[in-house]
Image (cartoon, rainbow, N blue to C red; front, side, top):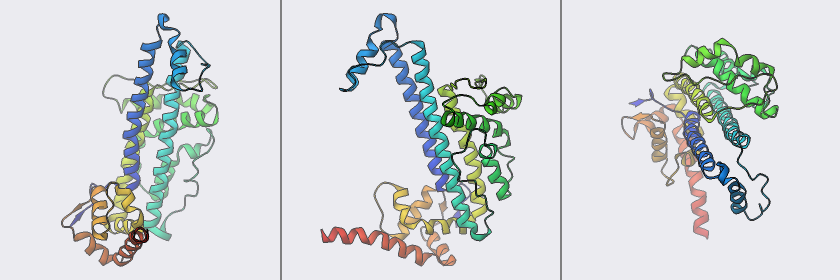
Length: 317
């Protein structure tokens, strides 16, 4: 008996892992900035910044800035968050594309068309781009009730990202309007249990400054959406669709698993299913189900071809 109720499919696994890494990166980068302030931010230490820059690389013998002013500190803070926000939405767009690919494999020709889903670089005024998640839900006839409260926050952070990418970090009219809208504060309040951290408000063409705490929040919000999408994808694919997806990705499975490569097809599929949090009654369950679907032999052959070639090469050398 195979239990898929807690399954985490590959697109969600990748985004979840990214969320954990970017969380650490932001906190380490922000802590490093604080350490720099303590080391070079006091008036008595005003020349320390230039000395640190000179010492950090042999070609940087003419520091572009010598004093760690408030403006420099604020710019550094904004740079950490801007980088993070760009990386977060890049990872989320990759998750969306991966989810769409899983749907296409699961439904084949029955998949509703959504040609704009892979359009990752639109302008900041592209409303369809901003709401792409909800367009995807609509195309799949999935209920968006579980994430509807997150829609204003998703739009806010997506617009921030687009303005950073396409407007040199200047707020667009769409972002300025949304940043002061009451629906945004209502959506934020529904997520917070502790003190209200609030979101930044902007005027048109004002420089965007997002604190690192809000960059982390944006990743958290996207992970909540990804969690809901993963659950709906699992329910849609069912065990048969998941196993077909595993068979399709046969050659990549060892890379996805990480660690010591496996050569036995049975070991690879079972290890991958376990990584996806799919519970197996016995190690033979997956093989029996794949044989039922008629995909075991093609999967086994793909694994054999993929693992035999390197071995032959190694023997020749």
